[in-house]
Image 1: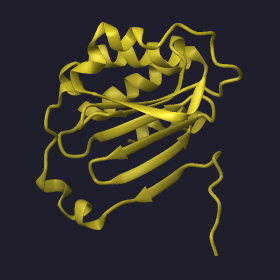
Image 2: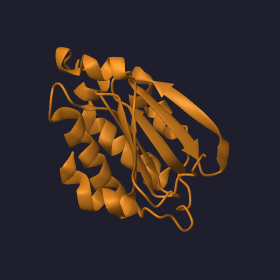
Image 3: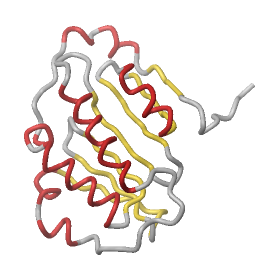
Length: 164
């Protein structure tokens, strides 16, 4: 019998066993996003708080940002590499009115992004591969090098981030 996931509960999914079996034989490779992580955090904060993006997924290892816009939620946009750091990229998202009734308020976005930075850089073997913030439903998504995925309600993320 299938059970629907309750979005108010932490969901952990174990990935490919073959990835987990070799996790200690790998190390994090420094990506463009790692090299420019301070800029990436500032940009991501701006996109989520002033540029109409309600769901942002950062793929640290492959240098991708996947963006869902509040005024066009059915189509996501993927941006790659150096493109993300260009002025044209930032300006392609106009300044907008704040998102109505977000679960994650604007001032709460930056601390989440800072935790993503910490989780990406804190260990060379077990590290954050990608992470997402959805301000409307309040879910934080994370996938680690051991191929484990987590979907955590924002409040629980704040309370348990030291677990990682």
